[in-house]
Amino acid sequence: MSFGSMFRELCCSAFAKKTAEDMAEQYGGEIGKNLIGGNNELANSLLGALTGKQQLSIQNVASMVQSSGGEQLVEHAETKGLDPALLNGVMGMLKGGGGGGDAGDGGGGGFDMGSVIKLIGGLTNRDGGGGGGGADGFMQLLQGFAGGSGGEGTNTGNIVQILLGLAKSYFNVKGKSNPAIQDWDAAGAGQNKSDDNFLNWALSVIRDLVFPGKKPKEIIQAGGDDDIDTGADSGKKKDDGDVKGWFDGHPEIGKMQKDVFDDIFDTTDDDKTDEDDPAPVIPTPSDFQENCSCLDNASILFLNCNLLLEYRKNWRFLFSTLSHARSLDEMMSKICYKGPTLIIAKDTEGNMFGAHASTSWCDTEGGWVGNGECFIFSIQPKMAIFHSTGKDENFQMLSSDSLAMGGQPGNFGLELNSDLTTGSSSGSIETFHTIRLSSGSTFEIDHVEVWGLGPEPDERTERANAQPRQPNLKTRGGDVDMLDLESQIM
Image: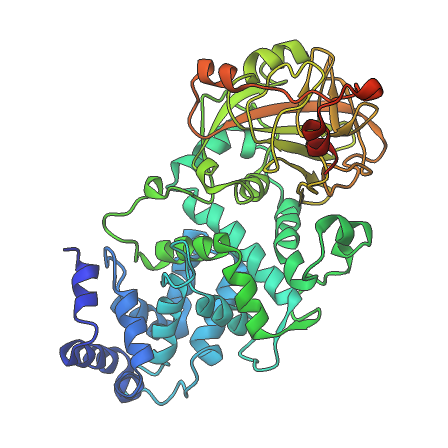
């Protein structure tokens, strides 16, 4: 049994509680003991924080907080790569933003031991779903960032700032040890770094909190993203219950929170590694060539967290105009019968967009393949996912002349032409709730890349399963399959 598991077994015993009280008294004075003695929630937070390797235990954190008013902890976190926004949140928590108490009352240390306990427990607990940090820790960060003010809701600007801090800190902190992030740096993300895209990601995540019940197409076309305040202490206030519910609907936030602060406090479980996560925040790229991708870290985070869980662990490099001949024939030879894929295109104006194809590509012979799991997406200038409307099944079409998703000939949601130099996009289609992805109805292509998702499938099986749906247009003289026609119009 691991140390963490054994400690949990003791959680409900009087011995465990007495141990917590003694530790709190040793490092936080009599007030620290009192905080634990009458508060089972704090005791459980302490015990939960003591899982893992324990190389940086609560004693070490308490010592850092005690030393120079917490400056030693700040220096440690900065060295690890914690973003300033999160540093402000942590220090706000320690100064009483999340814990209360007078910093001068601790006879054995002169700091708020309750805040230390809630800091570690809240930020590294697994109560957020999917193995992530908890909503309570996120709320404490928000309260600390705001200087301890609370009780009247949370400014949307502060939520955006903490989201930015978490995303930047995740790549700063985990990038030093996570092989997947290091591989993506080599594949191109390192040279494509963009702070602006982290803001795009944060806005895409907070959209359903600010505009509940509305689809991204409606929000973007009405200019809603531009109306979201992103500065500290700005924007409309959201009820704490709404924020917690929204947090629970985005487990990637809790995962990043836990991973970042597990690294800062060194509370990672002994037997857990990044490779053990079946649905990680960042996928591992395979078979890639150096600098083959136009994606940056924020884009990879955005795309991966919008895929089915089974596709989030591994992406297989299939094609890039930076690595292969620029032609649709060349791309077809690399992507057909390779399972679900992501296609990313960048036009010469800097707009970046693409599509997720849920089934293997093949020559559809004028018909369509794919299902309702397909979607179109935008990365620049806005990050958004545009899902199926359910009105038709025109998901994936491919021939030697063009690759298209959604819509119909002459009016596709996204189309790439045969030489991969031009394309088209329409926001007026039945297949997806999409906007026009480019500034005009046609665009010039700067770059295209394709990634296969999940394990590589058996090509013979994929060929056998490829059955394009042909449009049934023979309606004169009664020559019509009514079931097929019904499936196309429903």
